[in-house]
Image (cartoon, rainbow, N blue to C red):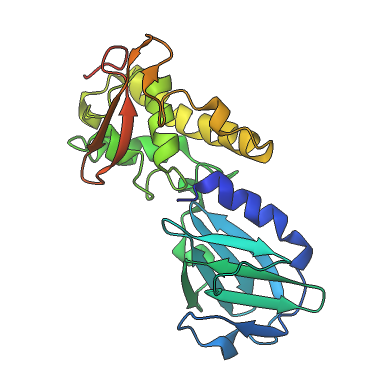
Length: 242
């Protein structure tokens, strides 16, 4: 599943289409293509794992789900869920969720919850966490209303970095560790972005998909943890269960 940093990369890659008119719309999604026909793109935005194509009075939302992908100025052999054609290029989306809405995105999205946003608000995240003391930290990190953009890779790596066991409840975290959790969710997301752009992301994974903890040099654990039931890699030795 693409995580927040990957959507930021997409947003940056399509900037050449800003101000351009959509001259043709096609694909196998069930949206009304006429709503996008001949619309001029006024902006591209990202909120966590959501990619937004903003036109006057209408916004296209793309959610890449588990297996979504995109191509710019090229196509895959698979049928596109949505294809946006411009005079001098195209954007094609595959295996994703497509939605159109007419509300102002600022009324729908809390940009301060996005860990990649300039308006990210750590204090608000802390307040939201304190409201869910019985939630496992593994689930809390994946809560998009608290940490928009954090996905499973970031979750696993953050918890390993701060030495916290994924089955720890939020309310059991010492204040120092709670602050570290919030800080590293953002820090690691920007490291992810840097490594992803350099095509070296996997080389920097410390615990995600690993069979051995590099800190302890003992076998790592893999479980499907919490209500989200996502693959969780951790070290039972150095990650403390509070």
